[in-house]
Length: 515
Ligand code: NAI
Image (cartoon, rainbow, N blue to C red):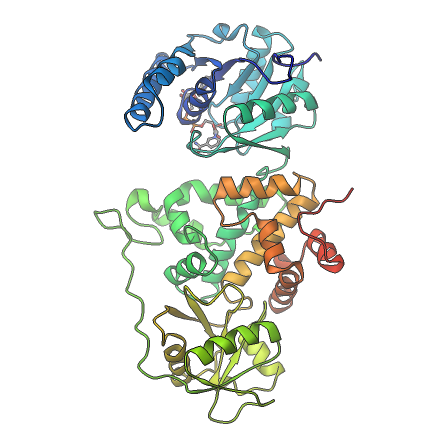
């Protein structure tokens, strides 16, 4: 196969003639970024008039961008001049690259590519924007399957600045290389992935929602509490239930189920049955006014006000030294809040008992240390204690001791939530699960560690790339959380990835690659 696309002497790519088939939301977005970067775009759609409508919509978009000062009118004119339309696929003759963004249906995509193969020379690259189908399967029956690769954009394309380039099993490596160049030329961060279910972003994204749902399914806390803990303590922009409501359960449930089944019921990706019950009830989220939250006419969710901090507070506290570093953080806080913190080896009878677990639940820790569970609480000290504090009770903790603990922890006005006993509390288990899945993606060689972090940061908007996040927490800390979670639950869902285990054992960064 010859080189794809044109390159100037310096190796920089020059103007490309691009075909876009399917002029919906995604096709229009792809056309916009390509034309803005100076490439010539031909739009085609099988619905009569759709391509021309798409060009008109793009003209209106460019006008809005000009009015908002995002581009000059000369740039808008030049962009629009780069976009033309054709009534049939024949109009794509002469294109160096054709990207399809048609309906997500394997048979329809295969048939389109078979038609394109008859129109376009064997050097024309054919790319699919599929998010869930196998690129290999789309290409397999073509005469030249090596010319096909995935080019998976995210919606809205101009704002989501990442694109996954997917090598199918039959793809020529140079096809992906060319698409990587194009993605970068269009202003996106291009990451490279193997043809595996969910590629990088939709695979890595299985941790957050499914673990948030699982915490909820274990009755650890109501969904608004889980959402605000993950926002305030772990730094996510939206909690899992806010995100599910925004995306719509009709969209996210099939994706969760599909990835779970495509990986042959891998427990790490297991969704929760509540999703199907909510779908049956039509509680799809924001778009219908009700999902996990109920939305008012102003579009805002109705959320009960947070519980006021009790007017009582514990004065004398004993903190378990089982996790010395976490204990030191919590002791310093409690002293700042005015409590007398005991240094004794065992708690006195009138002292509040505080644990700082790592992937364990409070009951297991209290029993292992022979502590009085009726006055025991745990504090999550892993994610900082300045924005929100999370206190976990055992099933035996009395409401009086819980309130004394809440009163103390909320004494300086920082919000406090009390949750029920849970191995890994809330944020620890969700973040550890996300890091573990990213490690497994690296272990499977789906993408390079750096690309995994780049794709997740840009595609999912997490506060950190998951592998770098694991490094910040400490690979051994994440490993301990997962081992304790696995032991407490007996669920293979939490089994640590070998990628994590080996790097923790050797003191290596989770971003480090094998040779
Ligand atoms: P859309 O429904 O807005 O647009 C699809 C367009 O393709 C329509 O204009 C339709 O008339 C046209 N079309 C359908 N079958 C065709 C055919 N055989 N030949 C020519 N044109 C045909 O869909 P959207 O949202 O733009 O998605 C398109 C593709 O992009 C799908 O494969 C989807 O999985 C993928 N994708 C979508 C994302 C999203 O958030 N909407 C994100 C990432 C990928």
